[in-house]
Length: 341
Image (cartoon, helix red, strand yellow):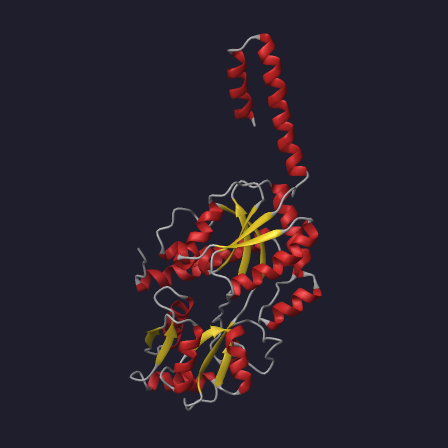
């Protein structure tokens, strides 16, 4: 504001007294309007940019959260799908939006962490955003086809090591979650895995897993748990500290013999850098109220999502999660020399 008033004095200095009075009155009105606008936020609909197409996991979570946040804010939150380049196009649009609280960016470990290590972005995933809240997380499950002669994770790892000519893992291409987690699994277990990339989404790789064409898949619980429950695939462990309420019989990686192998597909909410602190606090409060809604909790649970405890529903917790993910993936991506131009 000091720069604003310094520029104002220079302009007024070149004017006559009558013109000065009129201009000064207008400038004061504009300054007051800015303050009132922050106090009365939100005064119009808000846009939440989903950096993927409609119908995917991020889009579903966005629409569920947006609906309940709208009820608290008293203004609709309109979901806008802006897909492309692994989510970097939509996130870039949000990064360059006005920092007025009317553009929200929903994303995850890929869009707001891993992409910064792989793509030549025209924005910074950390310094160009203000974190709002960590929304939910979905751990991964280590699974194989039933043809693999192993009944637990230790036996499965032993089988993979003994069969380097057969051992293969499904990915969605270099830099994808499946690719990076697969590389991490390979490093931890000393197994030699062939990475098989799929472009047709989860369905094609699942069919090959069921048919025995690939042996390992480390996929989000939302996609794998239905198959584990039905006995179509064998689940070995969940990549989380605690067992999942949706699958209490599935051990954690710590219990199964691969301690500390934690990965989750978490989602968060951001706004452009420079958004007033009062607006950040308002959005955080609305998001917390949404997560406290029992109907939303039930729906997210059906999707395999875990809502973080209340003490982690803060901007600081999301910032810490984002920082941790970048630090976790950086050495893996560097070692694999993964870059997308």
